[in-house]
Each structure stands twice: as C-alpha cells, then as structure tokens.
Image (cartoon, rainbow, N blue to C red; front, side, top):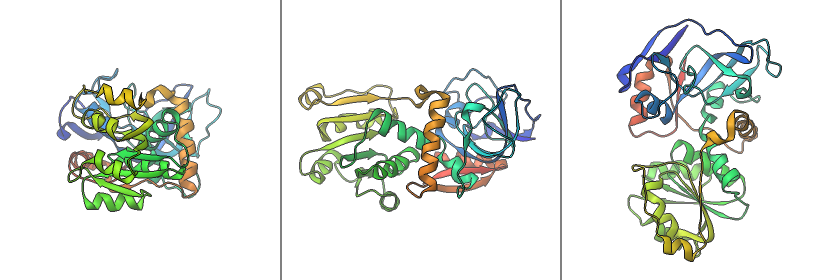
Length: 324
C-alpha cells in the first residue's frame, strides 16, 4: 500500500510518499481502508519531534481518518467488515492515518451516520471532540450563557463556536480578519471581535453591558489568559486548551480572586480511547442532524502531503483533507 512516512524529523520535506506493507491485525484491532485523512497541528508536532512519541522513525504519521472496515481481528465483536467508520488518535504510539490502510483499536471506531461523507467525518476528527470536551465536560456550558471563543476561525475554535451555539449559548468569537469574521458568523457566532484591531477585553465587556462572559474557551493560553481574567464575569470559567507561543503565563491574581474566576485546564487524552469515541459519536449525530458542520478548506491527494503541511503553516481556513 501507499503511505506517507518520515524517516527523520524536520520540515515538510521529510514527508515521503512510498510503498509499505499493508499492516497485519492483532486480535483486538480493526483494519480500515482509508478514504480520507485530515491534517492537524499534532501531525506537524510529531514530524518536527516537538511531540515525542513512543514510535521512532521510520513511521507513518497522521491522527484522524475515515473509511471502510476491511477486516477485523479475532476478538473484535462490535465492528464488522464493510462498516463505515471514522477515528482519531493515531500516529503517537502507532502508525498513522496518512495511508491507504490504517489499523485502529476497536474502541476507536466510530460509525459514520448516513448523510456524512468520509471527508466530513474525518474533518470532525480531533477538533470537535476537543471542543466538546472543553465546553461540556470541563466547562459545563449552559443554555443562555455567553461564551467567548478565542481563536474562533481555527479548527477547534470553529467547532467550539458551533457547539456552543447548538447548546443554546450566545457566542462571541475573536478573529483576525473580515474573512474570518464572515466564516465565524456563518457558523453561528452572534458577534465577532477583531483581535488585531480591537481591545478584546474592552469590547467583550461592552458587548455584555459590563457583566463579562460566563465561559471562555481559550486556545492561545499564554497570549490571552490575562485578558480573559479581565473580561470574564463574576463566577465565570476559563477553559484552557491551547498553550500558545510560550510555555508560561502570568495570571493577574487579584482580578481572578475578586471575581471568583475558575481556571480549568484540559487534555482530550484524559477522556481515553472509549471516551473520545463516545464524544465523537455524539458529535457525528449532531452533524447528521445539521446542528454542526465540519469546515473543509482544501482537499489534496495523499501524495501531496508535503503541500498540505505547507498550507497548514500558512494562513488558511478550515480543515485540510488528504485523499488516498
């Protein structure tokens, strides 16, 4: 089969499209004929060795994908050959999804509802479960609350906007351009704030008549957390997902104490394989019902994975999908 592998770490040039043996199954595993795989920042981190993994090169990268079950191991009872599934969480301790075939654990297989294409299902992948875990599991979002999404046009941000709206919240999203603002509003945001031209905290307080927002989904922690403390309401929550440019941040303690601010940190990995799959199944049902939708910005052949990684590093909107 064809796969995209790395034999060493570095830039997009280390991605090699080549022939590799079709993987063999262990008893608890499922073999999927991949119809779509998505490109994520975690894939870049693995490629650059910024996210150390148990498996050393040469290895196939890629975390998310979707396709048709080609075969199942002897101990697999809940998944059948011919079933359409999508999955997330590959490429860390295993071979990844940038391939014509991928092996997943039975617990990672999520049925694709009728009406969703493989590309759409793959694009739900990591970003929607991450947003769901942040808003629902950690943030306990409630209908009628005001939610601010920092970085609303990104993969997780655009998912967060849609999910918050679907759960009945008023949604404010920060964006970096008018094109991003148009996208975020089309996904359900009630207001947008251009972080390049406006004071985000001041504008958020203005939009909430001085009260502040109930819940912040923060995707650039080290850059924005001090402002989040300023703009959150008394008793408000800040769910921290993405590190941002620095591994450290200074929190204005006085302001946080004065408003009973709750800081919540998260990693989707803590949900476990089965937990992530359960969330993904719920999100897929929401997508099939038209409550949320994946945002696909570009579709490329698997052989052009290098180009896909170059696009990811540039200004782009939506998920990048690779098709074997």
